[in-house]
Image 1: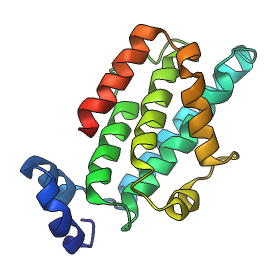
Image 2: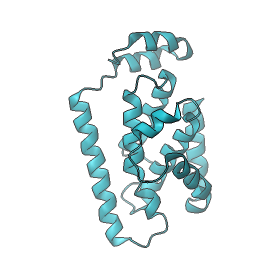
Image 3: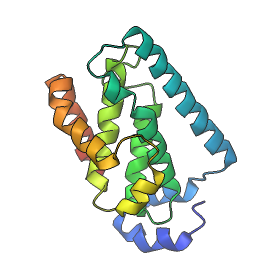
Image 4: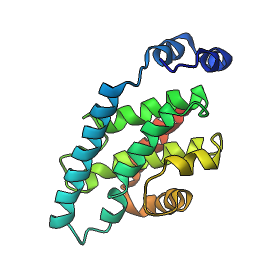
Length: 178
């Protein structure tokens, strides 16, 4: 469990019963850590393979940041200072990246990972105001400034993504964030 039942109890009033049950059942043990690390490595290797073939693709630099954003989400899930309501949303973001059903299929080189990236970035953008910037920076392992990266990707997302997919991403975020 989260090892801090008080946090869940304190913030449970803001969540529905199903969300509270999910959070109570969520256990982040060594096996989960290893599974997430393997997913991180698989994602990084997939992107590296694409980088060789599609080194001049205009969105590749952004897609290369996806594994770092993914690890940030996992680390935020473990941090006791992150509000439970945000952890529920973070679980949805992680699920979108992990699950094979996407707005753009992942087998499409480079572009197939853009929807994952934008879901994560827009999701992070909605919760950063609730989380202490020191916590975010402590868990960020990317090479660029986290807030600048999020802002930069959001500013360019309209130009990088089909407007229909872009609208679906924004709707997905709004529905899950409430």
